Length: 287
Image (cartoon, rainbow, N blue to C red; front, side, top):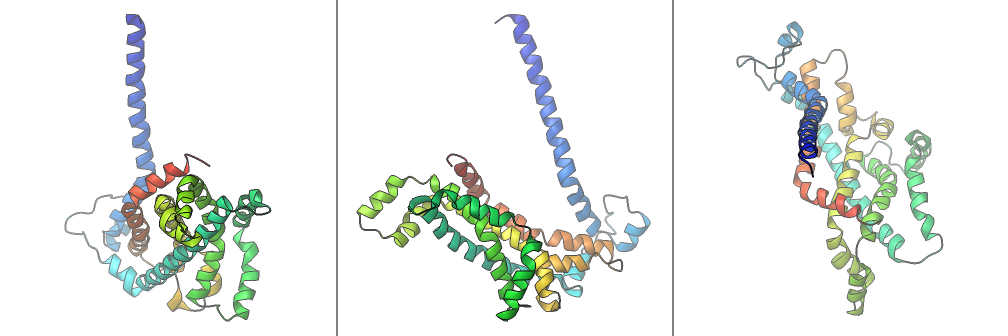
């Protein structure tokens, strides 16, 4: 390799290195900038925000966390978050149990139409929610579950099982069938096989799918509005944060509420970070 070629490659590497950091910096500013600005805005008194809305950093004498208890207690966002936490955890648990069984059957068992199962389930998930709203409302009305968190869990499970099954199937395909065959030779039944062998091997994928389902249930708005709008005590965070957009609500309270409702999801990502990274990469290995 000539000296000229080495010099050119060295220059290209330096330029690409600089461009890479510029792209990363711009991406961080675009994505994290509004979130940071909203958090800093929530730490300022409302009067200060009205008089100087473009000031980014609050001064030491005006720094306050009063907007957070106001959003949690006075506007009921704390109760909304508790309702959403119950609904999201129940939805994730039920959807994962049903999806693991369904995905395992789609991967390992032989039955007519097995190759089309993925397309069918994904097609069901892609149906617009508004198309299912009226039939689900009529169904829940007849069984007496409208206006209840249990009814909302039922709707969310039906809504998330197709996509959870589709995701888990990809992860279960990567589990070696030879390990399952060895366990069955040792006398392990199907359910014991799934519990003792398949789930430990597919745990990263299960964690990634569970967190995704949790996020769907935590952020969903349409069905929560449809089934719970008449009962304010059962509102979820999506309905609670919507009421904070009214003109009479101070901007600082709105920002505090918006930041607060992201905490459970962000905490879930940090707690399951290692499993999520492993699960996403293992699901991409084979499918």
